[in-house]
Image 1 (cartoon, rainbow, N blue to C red):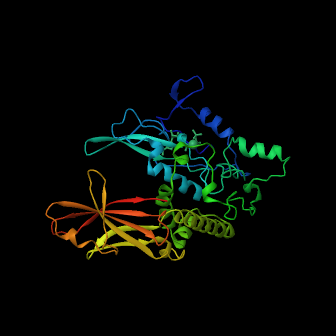
Image 2: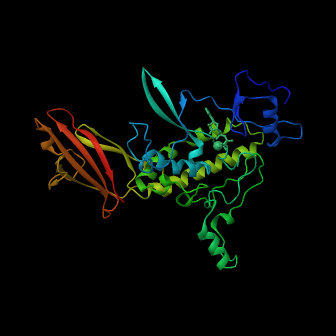
Image 3: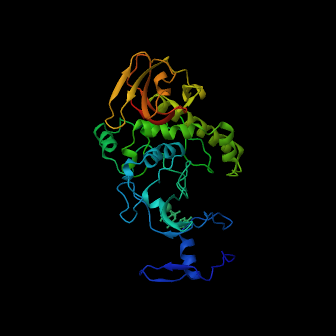
Length: 357
Ligand SMILES: Nc1ncnc2c1ncn2[C@@H]1O[C@H](COP(=O)(O)OP(=O)(O)OP(=O)(O)O)[C@@H](O)[C@H]1O
Ligand SMILES: [Mg+2]
């Protein structure tokens, strides 16, 4: 405590709303409220000061009316909808607007708003200064449905999160992988972007979660310098198992093919289920159409039923578009439509992908 020295230009806004120089007494008042160890040590979080001018938190709905670049309502943004999956993986239940920060930054003379996520103190089983509640991640902080069910059933109905068992690792808190259900995970407060998420948002995020290898997860957890090797091992196992549950749940909703491109006149792709050892995809069916980019009308090419780009695509002077509908045999629900643009003699290019479910 005595070793903490306040910088000359540190300022606070006091209880009366007055902006003034921070004093040692202000610091003392903060530290009196936070836990310390028997030896009188405090545990703190430090992060690099974000560059730029603070514009306050972002919102998980609507657009910023002071930012002309902000044109997609936030509840429909892929990154914010998909953020649900990353939060579920890491049990980041405090992932609300207050823990984000928009900054006005300048690059090569151009100013723009950069969105930042901050405050990961309540992740991985922690609730910042104590273990997370076992209820966290299982339901919202305030939710009528489960409360009503418990009252009406006189306590006989048990929510799924109450069945979780946690080993006693004080350095970790409460995170587990047995009852974790990636499709029914909840942050503390309802989030409009999370609630609007669709299977393709979940797939987008799940493929990034699945891209972390076991070794990478091990190396990341090691940077936490947990003094108990059993706790470290437990956290590694939890993250690997939660990752795999995410892959299993969200790769099943859509056709998990990715990275489409054209190589040697053929449409090629990566089968993510196969790549991650999650079973082979059923044999695929392909059908090609000419695609009118103005009217979005498809004209089927009855003899084009392989991954080879239709021959006529190579004989165009003007730009022409083609659409390949790819689906597992007998399951047209999980379809991917890949749009290809052909121009002159050059190699046709993949220009768009639509997924359905
Ligand atoms: N890296 C950073 N750069 C600039 N400002 C930051 C940074 N980290 C945090 N802040 C500011 O400090 C505030 C509190 O940070 P943080 O959310 O990490 O702590 P907290 O204890 O959870 O506080 P709160 O309860 O307000 O969320 C943030 O709202 C933000 O304004
Ligand atoms: Mg915070």
